Image (cartoon, rainbow, N blue to C red; front, side, top):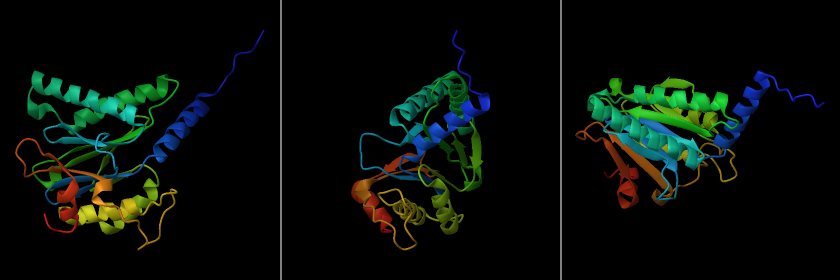
Length: 239
């Protein structure tokens, strides 16, 4: 009679975490930064059809790294959650905190009960009436939630890139300033995945970027994409 194969719970969770981290680490980074009039999102993504940054509701946006089909399913579920809650109660009852909690439950359940965890890392952001009221939540593959302040970096080489953002970001920066910082940070990752030295960052054209903002000055729907010539002018300081 064959003995059943046994793996300790600690080893099983470690293997799942390592698997998820490897998948996330292969993805291109996403940088999220607060600025004086809202929250900016930037990533290196030449595709105009497969978005890593999306609108969820009036003043809430979503950014992700990892497997596209997995985080796209989460995005769609988030939109449905927000629409149903806003219709059933009130539009002001749809918050980033509530959405982050819903995502945390889904990610945690999959991580502990399914054979394969979701290879995704998410940011849910909500822009408030003032910078102090902005909300940034970072969600990991295991359902853990972190309440971030000012900026978030996800994806490959996130630790090293976070250090660069921390050195360059400060409260009250304008949109051009945070986007230039984001592009420099993204360009610090070479094509082979290594980190470039200071002043040796790759040049990333506007066509190779996916950029969006939550602009607190916009009425009701705060989400806006920047692309093409408009993005190129913005990066050069002419908005």
